[in-house]
Image 1 (spheres, one colour):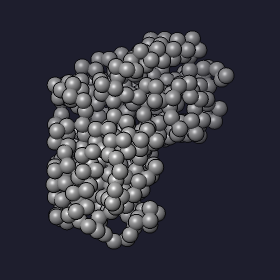
Image 2 (cartoon, rainbow, N blue to C red):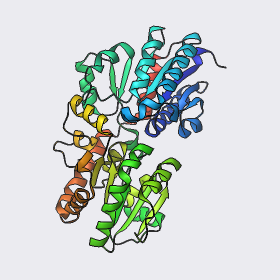
Image 3 (cartoon, rainbow, N blue to C red):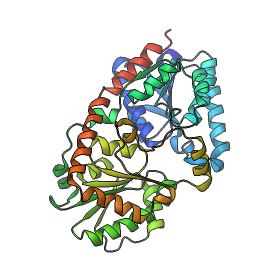
Image 4 (cartoon, rainbow, N blue to C red):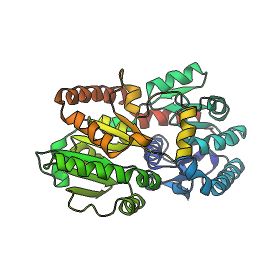
Length: 381
């Protein structure tokens, strides 16, 4: 095993964090070829060379309803990691998102003299603003993906760097025609992408209204084709259980390849989260839908500080992306929102131009910038 000054400890708890962590690992390896990495992540971090102590599914939850059944296991894992790394300190710790897990771990590690970087700002600017005190105690440096987040942390006196978003570095000029050919879709005609989420709980709540909306849209637009990519086997199983047989609906079901599905689409219907930003970077007009358990939604409404959920709406001067949350996420509203796009080509053109501005603002070489910050904080022998 490598000594502490040759190791980075890193924890991610969901697919988007797994991708961010993998990019950071590769960028750090280019600067420090002898570095070793261990922690929690998924297939991308595993492929990048991180030794996984636990699979990220053990700590990934959504809402309070997903937490109760896993809380004891999650706390035991966090205690184990804190003991392990305080006993044999790494050169630095990087917590990638999952703040409810990572901030507590970071506080324990930082009190033991381990430099701690948190990658992806917790949304204290949006809800649960009291967490800023906890963040100040837990982290040496915050890596923010968006410029307005960095300004917030500077006002709060927390060291921060806006690194931009890796997706903006990856996505350049969208090519819908090539994407359609790659998926075997016709060059002409209407293509709608459906993304009901990456977690089982998201898919279970959104599969039925999204599919019912697709059937109504198919009746209104007989030439339409639908593409539905699944984040993984669990998501596909949940969808098939909730939605049943897709019947004669002209729909292409994909394992993965969500970016290709979005790039091929004229309009998308998707779960709130990273997919909304990805659609914006691909210049795809979209409708955001989301449902939580009644208690999680009640609590979120009481504690939120902003009016919007979709990240593009926070990045644009004027919110342009329709958001259908909780009871509003029903088939009728979904159909009306999609048709509002299709019936207004000028609006489609304007929103694509606004999305192109987002891509320009977030293209900053995030992996390299994040690696520079972590490298500068690493404890040296």
